[in-house]
Length: 544
Ligand code: G1P
Ligand code: ZN
View 1 (cartoon, helix red, strand yellow):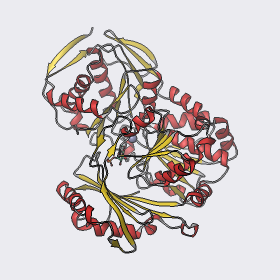
View 2 (cartoon, rainbow, N blue to C red):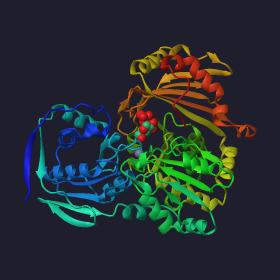
View 3 (cartoon, helix red, strand yellow):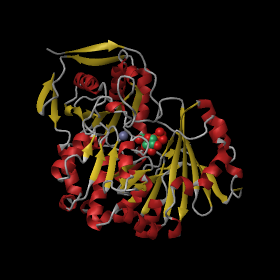
View 4 (tube, rainbow, N blue to C red):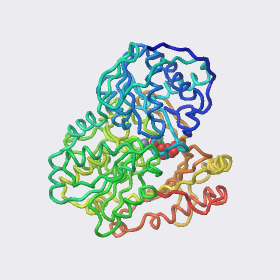
């Protein structure tokens, strides 16, 4: 028997206005009615779920299953028509985005804190995506935020847990629940976009790959697509079993956290190609044998070679990158004669450009790359894109990069993160740089002369909205640049991100280590911002 209960409650703290979801320590989500309050706030913010069809799934982290049951009960209580849920409540973020679009759903709930560690003491999160498959836009998130401040009661169906272990269609009260294989539709989409035969032939020729799923959600996706469908040798996918605490690791695909893969790739006898993905499957890291590909370079390489791939054979409508991402893709766009948009950090800004058909590919320096096939960044998609390009070009990753730089120049790039910095100190540092912006142009720091300095603001060319305060940028003559911004996703104190870039045109200068190549830019950033004294840190916590 089922019955709907209305439970009085109180407003919740914690959502940052302007974000499409809520990310908190898992124990916070587990406190009395916290999750319920946020889900009800989403329902209230979107005008209720009566008669609607929703997609539901998560990255499998601790509390994923219990949270999914709460969402199902609350969707049923709100009168939703149907919920399409991944088996065991699993869906990667891009797979959820695909399902929302493919099924014409009204929206979806994704249970994930992305690349943040999981487990009882880790992080948990809830995101709401709209009918285009992408993160809710600012108008919607503002209404959800307002709802969290006004909530007085929530509605939930009292029932047993819904069995989600097998694909099936069941009901909860009046609501239909369709339990789907989380991989199937996504694998079909990948098969439409990429030349699977060419990739199969590549693997048959002895090409060796290592994919580190980091015990997160892409394990089953990568195993099915790479090993089962594309015939990659057994063992290609490592750490493929998703675990509630990601095996104690930090499911963030970068040189620091994907160190096992990194070490293997940096040996002379390492695999031809390495890749990793994050907790919810939307990020990717690409590494060749002894050749790391920065995410900014990866975006540029994909743009330059897109027509080699069936899904993009007719060319790109345009490309987009977040402001702190390097200008490598700008140089490709210029050659191709297509538009290149510079957006604020965060995936939601790409959605409008993709929806309006102004951009086909987009990406961020933070290991996010994607296209108009979904409305989220997509880790495995980027990996398959690379495999398709390598299969056609018949070059090693290192050879491909050298050829790319020879044609477009090399944008040396690095990001230095200072984590859990005292919030006041971090704000003080930003204010200190902000106050110098007007006087910086013309000043020299070592060999670098400032050409421009401003605080980035974005006017959305599609909906006309303006986003201000999106990072401080200092451009130097010759294409070098320093960008400073505070993270919007950190959960402890403030995280200062310092983005560093320099353009090298002469092939003689292509072989440097990025940190060495950027030494003057790093020194200029220190001189302008006083990072060491203001943060009290000698060195960044994470260098990517
Ligand atoms: C970080 C990344 C940003 C990305 C976001 C969500 O945000 O820098 O590019 O879109 O995570 O994955 P930040 O913490 O810098 O605000
Ligand atoms: Zn993610």
